[in-house]
Length: 304
Ligand code: HMG
Ligand code: MG
Image 1 (cartoon, rainbow, N blue to C red):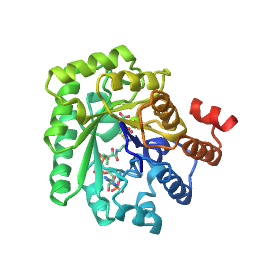
Image 2 (cartoon, rainbow, N blue to C red):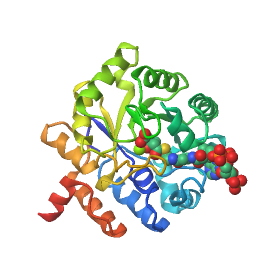
Image 3 (cartoon, helix red, strand yellow):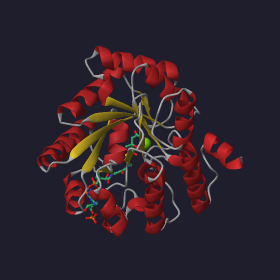
């Protein structure tokens, strides 16, 4: 693997697929992960251990993690493989399957918290803290997400003070990094800079933050760059720009990994990811899902 200046967290197999209605065979998911591993990505989120009623598409999480291929990937610690868990039940299942890293997720807004995990923000934080204690005890590493950093589909605008409280709590419970989720995809470069300035002023270390930008208004790549300029060095993205949350009506996919890698490549900033190889994976998964390729850079490279 090449030494990277920024780390890309590929969330395609989880965020990318979770909102797709058509059935996707587990074997296709395994092949996606396996192809992504060969591109040089440092972290690949595998799936989530959530209620199958809440996210039917990922109801095969146990099956997926039990496959010989994924069990092998979990043994090889060169690449991080977080699994999203909302509660103790999710953590226990993840532990049984040899998962080494989990990601907990809470919202900065009450409306989305209720819709997404059926509890208040404070209850979500308390559940995550419970998961954190057990996960850290078991020797796992843990990432955190805060959703709705700018706005909530139900509550409207969210204040930076609310975001900072949740971020600080996630760091305090032992998350090595907190990913700032613009779930609705309404942020712009100016908003990203202003929020990051606020977080920094409230004592949050910039090097413990990641950017997770959905592309509803076409601003995800611009938001990545704005965050980079503020010192953020970790970005979540999905191959082929897949993504979206079933409980966030109106939101589009994540920043496309190909677009993000293209941006950094052209700036001479090393991501460790082979763009050509990644573009092949993006074209492949788009064809598998019979969906147009949601990455502009990926589609342009594929057309060459
Ligand atoms: P609930 O109904 O309050 O929970 O849901 P419950 O404890 O009453 O359980 C309900 C049923 O789910 C029971 O089954 C449980 O066993 C089962 P039943 O008895 O009815 O057959 N259950 C589980 N099954 C498997 N794994 C589990 C689990 N827990 C309970 N861990 C709950 C609460 C949190 C479980 C539910 O609301 C849920 O699963 N929500 C997850 C929603 C989700 O995954 N959303 C997408 C991910 S977040 C996101 O995309 C944002 C992010 O990308 C960042 C950003 O963009 O901002 C991360
Ligand atoms: Mg997301």
